[in-house]
Amino acid sequence: MTRRTAPALLAALLLALLVPTARAAQSAYDLTERANALYRSGRYAQAILLYRKAEARGGDPSALSFNVANCLYRLDRLPEAAAAYRKAVGYSDGKFAPALFNLAGVLFRLDQFPESVAAYRRALAVDPSDATGWLNLAEACSRAGDKVCALRATEKGRLLDPEDVGTVYRLSEAHLALDDFDDAVRTIREGFEAHPEEIDLLVYLGDVHRMRKKPAGAAEAYREALGLRPDDAETMYKLADALAEDGKEFSAMDVLAEILRIKPDFTDAAIFLGNLAYDAKFAERAEAAYEQAAVHGNPEALYGLKNLAYDAHAAKRDAEAVRILEKALSLFPGDATVEADLLQIRGEESR
Image (cartoon, rainbow, N blue to C red; front, side):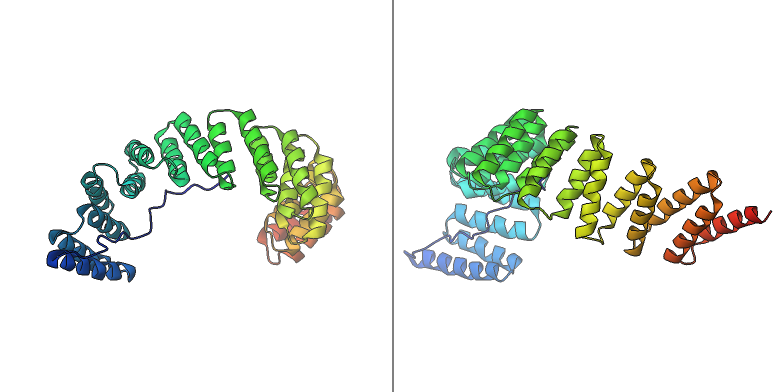
């Protein structure tokens, strides 16, 4: 799944005055220029003082309130930043879209999600062409628990920016939140057709199938991805997992063996192979897999080897049990549990 983050604020400063027209305006302009330089150098508290002086000397109150809010945001004074953005919006009679978008972003960070949704809606009423704004609205709607709003806003964002592959993931997630599995799959397929270089979409499709307990569909998607990116060990591991979930353990073992041929130090694959082989009563294959995992430093291999030894001991194959435990001790020198097991079995043999 894709990682979600809080909506970003607009980064650019707004110059409050561009052309001086009188002495007072000239002073406001100069103060604003000095404040902008302070902002760019990261001296936000000092910039705030000059922006406020510029406003007192006739500067544009909407633009200067916006700049003050940006500084407060940089100082992580979020409630004050929200208040300053509201002032900028008020001075502009609600027409200053950047202030509205930034206000919505601050409210989001304050976990005021319904209020953030309302601010994004106001901003998008002023500037409906902002694709990022629609996607941020979708995230705020999702956090507010309005799944339909999240879906509709994501659809709008994708329509405005169809080249953004990230919207494919977000739109499919919005469909899944509404249990529209077929629409989620359709969205991913359409996204891949539009961006065939984005092989990760096929991997994501497999993940979606697995999430919905459809391992056969997951395996098909992973295989399709591997047809385009054959030696992707991570996708191969997912394929093996899907095959095992689908009851095709032997096929899963073959895939895991291929992973270990390509990437011998992929110890999770070695442990997985060992566990599948152990369950299938293929002791030799399980032992070899656990040994490979141990050689590459995975401590979980010790438990696999000890289980094999316990089974051999229970079946009165003590020589085999001792051999396996001695191998385990060579791979994990000084392990007290293995030493104790060896003493016990050897003691039983000597009676």
